[in-house]
Image 1 (cartoon, rainbow, N blue to C red):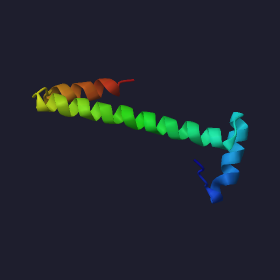
Image 2: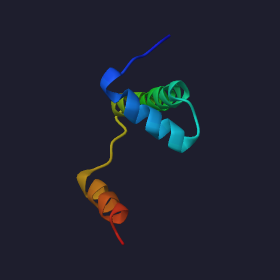
Image 3: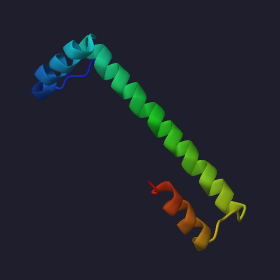
Length: 73
């Protein structure tokens, strides 16, 4: 498979050189990471929907406490 980004080829080549890989490998790696991240996200959404379908919710107070905990310094 060949992917061309004509206006961005020079930028890709520069980034690839900095990373010590060829541009094709750089793009393949980026595409694979994107697909892996998307798969993890979709799995998380599916899990959440399944939990919601089973009635497994937390109340607003508990959610507020969790959010505050996450942003505590």
